[in-house]
Length: 97
Image (tube, rainbow, N blue to C red):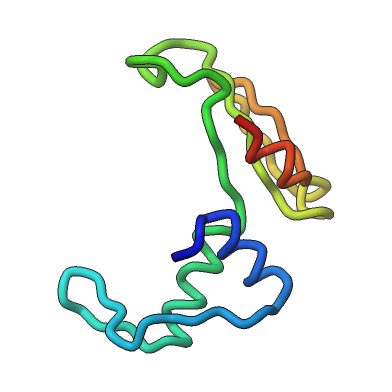
């Protein structure tokens, strides 16, 4: 089993990734190529709250850190709304505890 960080790193590095032959969601089976595309989409850009505490996301002026690929931030539309977002392309920084 790989962590989210390890799967993302393998996809981005075009490295070998073993996908279970019986991969499915609620009994609907995926083709391996379709599942890899699905995971690529979901791991392209990740976000995490700056603080981990009970009921945090119900508050105002929330702070999040987003992990985005290098070069993507330049074309990113930023809708700040009620949140404060910090962006990084450094996965080591993003995955720190």
